[in-house]
Each structure stands twice: as structure tokens, then as C-alpha cells.
Image 1 (cartoon, rainbow, N blue to C red):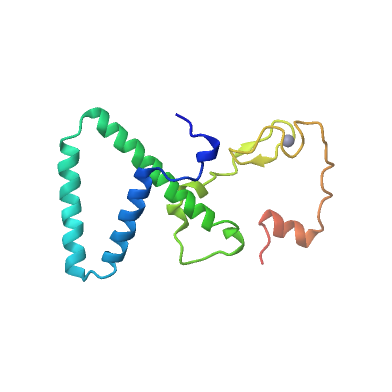
Image 2: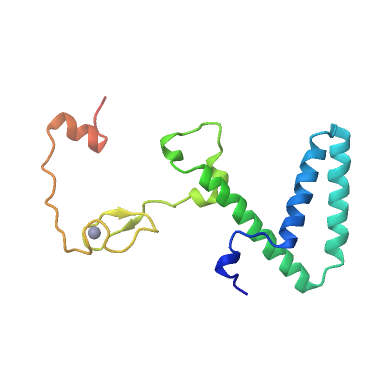
Length: 154
Ligand SMILES: [Zn+2]
């Protein structure tokens, strides 16, 4: 059921409980030593395994959908952090792990002007579907031409 406009941004009781639990969890985790952390993770894994074994197919599907949504939100928050990231390239980041950054190859060709485009670019981009005709560039001078076509010895 869609939430009322006035309720947008208001936490449900379940969300408040989860936030309180998360806050408690985080503060106690910062006090953990590596053995305690390992034990907690092991206990979490075991608990999840037991919970999943007793799930009905419907519950399993619901949980998986919730997981997908949670992962999407985590990625989206990362995306917000990466706004204008192209202008601040960080070699320490593994950009391949951000699937939403992958836009494919520039291998789609416009039928009108033969410009190469990415898959997500709309039809008619660049030449407005053949309505705009831009004259060809003049042939560049010799030194530049061999550099551009890759036949330069330099
Ligand atoms: Zn075109």
C-alpha cells in the first residue's frame, strides 16, 4: 500500500526498532576483539542457515527480494558518493565492482550520420535523426593526418 504523503520520511515502528538495534549493534561491535567478532559472525552465519532451512519457498522469495532491494540501496548510496567521480578519479577504487557505472561499449552506430553511440543513448541523438547535417571535416595536414590514422612513425 502506498504511504500517505504526510508519512513520507516518518519511520515505521519496525524501522525504528531496526535502527535502534543497528545502533546498539554498532556500538557493541566497536568494543569487540577479533575473537569476539569472529564468534559473532560465526553465530550469525549459523543462525541465518537455520532460518533459511526452515523457510517456505514464499518466505525465501520474499527474503531474496528484500536482500536485492537492500543491496540496490547500498549501491545507490555509493552512487551518491560517486557523483562527479569522473572528475576526481581515485586509483584506489575498483570501479569494476560498481555495475551501475558500466555503460557498455560505444558500438551502436547511427543510421543517419554513422556516429558511434553507447547503448543507452537515444535514437536521433547528435544529428536529430538525420535532420541536422554537419559538413565533413577538411582533410588535416600531413603530420596530423598520419598521427590521427595511426600510421605515423612517431
Ligand atoms: Zn545521427
